[in-house]
Length: 174
Image (tube, rainbow, N blue to C red; front, side, top):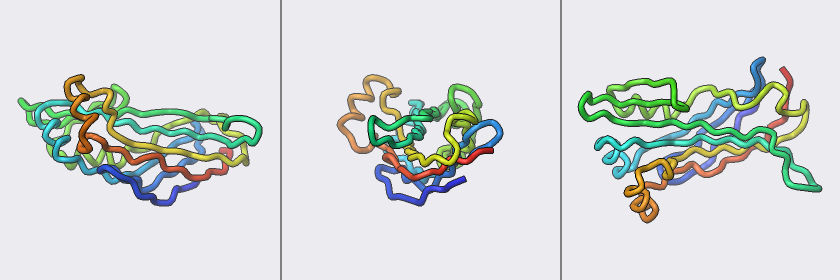
């Protein structure tokens, strides 16, 4: 198990920490972020426009003779929405695991702490090899309605991303 050191990020999402660990099922990622929606995003959400966030991980081993060997590459999608009629927030992870929330802060806790996530098979990494782990979490603008995408491209209020955070990991066996 290894934990990444905190790093600064921009645009309303900041990387806090991450842990990649070997389990019997495979390699799992646990990560934490600070997430504060901009006023434009809160307004869009309150009007019933769903927001899609994407958590991405890439685990690679550097090679001197060719491109890096990418051992694990995975992404997780989190969709948040607000139902104006029921006054309930709703979140889904990868199109399933639906949860309802009464308060926005309760739902944002799911974005801040996405939970443990199985990212790779048990034999995905070579034992005792050194890897670089890259993590990024942000708003997936391509999932917004087309009319809003045009606005989002020109406005900083719609660009939320932690940026890529990298840390070293020495593979362990379980």
